[in-house]
Length: 176
Image 1 (cartoon, rainbow, N blue to C red):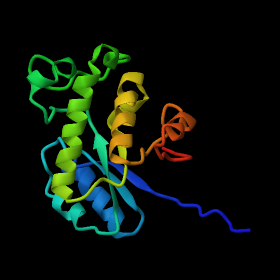
Image 2 (cartoon, rainbow, N blue to C red; image 1 turned 30 degrees about the horizontal axis):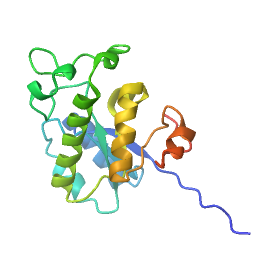
Image 3 (cartoon, one colour; image 1 turned 90 degrees about the vertical axis):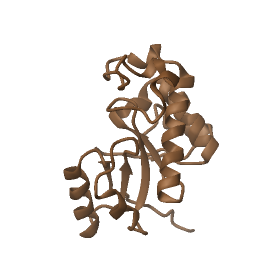
């Protein structure tokens, strides 16, 4: 009988959120501790963004962000996601229940396309800042994108079995 392969992926979140976080993740990659990272693509590029691109064996995923900073989309095109100043709404309990799925899709798809253009390849996985994919409205959009682009979701879905029944790969276990 063949034994099932087991994998341990050590992922570092929030790459490109700040220069300090990015520098620390690069150091952890250089020492062999971190095998994967999740990148903010809608934040201003830190000097380390080009460096992470050069790590050919590193898993680089897309850290979807709709809670911090500004969208890549024009604010008028994602009105239910932003304040009057054009920044993302503060993350509040159930704040996405009043958000249009089309606005979420437009912004996340913009982030996906920018990631692919910058890195010249698809992300190894997708996940979300502040675990917003646990909200049903956001979850449905992320599942749609994961299926469309055939990308695994890092982090446990709202329901791992439901995720897999949709044909989307996800982690079996996660420790934060």
